[in-house]
Figure 1 (tube, rainbow, N blue to C red):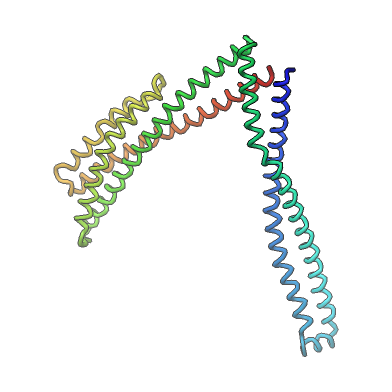
Figure 2 (cartoon, rainbow, N blue to C red; figure 1 turned 180 degrees about the vertical axis):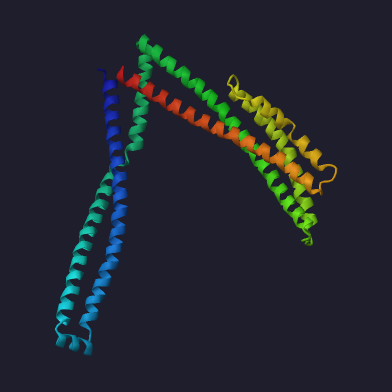
Length: 314
């Protein structure tokens, strides 16, 4: 075993020890939270028992009467016993809390080296990988294959992220148009029901105008989203082209519904149906993209683990 291999394995062992400490710290933190809640509850109970004892000790005529009946001392002994039990339990929990805090403080100092050790391990793996690529043809071939797969996934990831960003922008615009149409429809319904208010017609026209403007912006955003989707899903059995064709005609349908008389309620509702349908289709595609992002992350993590395993074990 070379000196480089030895340093790498020792550093990996050190990193694993710190990770075990992190796991133990997480468990202790959960336990500490529970113990602190119990301590707070016990403190409340202890205060109550103390008040009960003090109340009995301060009694006047009632005390004399109870003493005559023979139950005052018995009651006082009972309250003192309850107070003593509560006090012992409180002290027990308090000591437990203090011990956990002390242990967490010690562990936190050991955890401070995690980032430095992780950087050292990564640097040693890179150094060892270069050594293997230069002097071990068989291992070099395996590593080259892993690196090629990783590069392709990174390139694909860029395309997915670009599509996701374009979809997010398009979805925001479509949602805005949808919301303004909902507002316009509501104001139109108020007018149809005879509930006319000053400014309603103006606000309705304003909502429609904003929706028209957002629809115009949406058209360009949806076209770009469609282009990005073609890059991502090219070759897959997804009916993306149909969605994109419908997106391309989205604003034409929208404008035609409103251009003749956008104060007519039926046309507002018809436009809203179109916008809502578009929004729903975009959301479905965004969900597919988000799922794809997760798949990419899993594949990249798996490849990275495989690369490190080859380097460490070679």
